[in-house]
Length: 33
Image 1 (cartoon, rainbow, N blue to C red):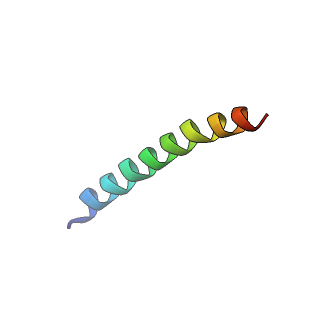
Image 2: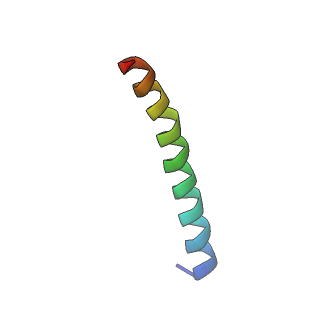
Image 3: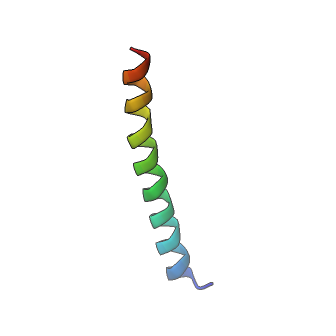
């Protein structure tokens, strides 16, 4: 795996994790309130 591909994969993975986290946490917070 070359470096540019690894960087692109890491960026996409972090973006997916970030979008999933920001998508789930507000729902959990709104349900608890």
